[in-house]
Length: 136
View (cartoon, rainbow, N blue to C red):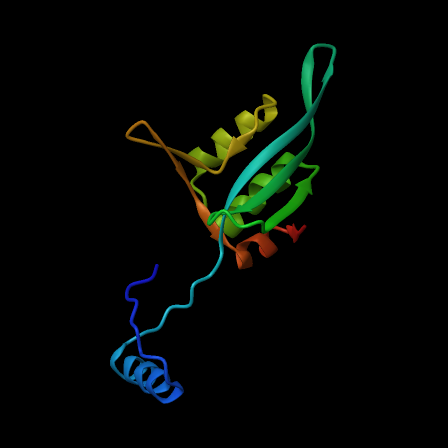
């Protein structure tokens, strides 16, 4: 989140002086990092009328509309759910809902509904790497 936009002037010295002044008066400086939404796409087959989950494709799409995209896949739904719990610390109710949607063959975004509106959980690149995703 950008808290302040300041025009320091056009000269190199005035820019440097302005930045130095801000650093001395600001208690912390936050670096803008890319954030991503996650969605989970199951690949299922039907065996005697019963759906069997073959894999879960995980897609991380950059929030800001950029073209950065990360992907990965899991062939064991329980390993996938355990990884989500460990890396993202999701509550058990949300993990159960994700498991149910995937086993029923439904694609699902990581998020939920709040006051009737869709909400999305955003994650950083460090978490994408911990989930085993790679950048496309």
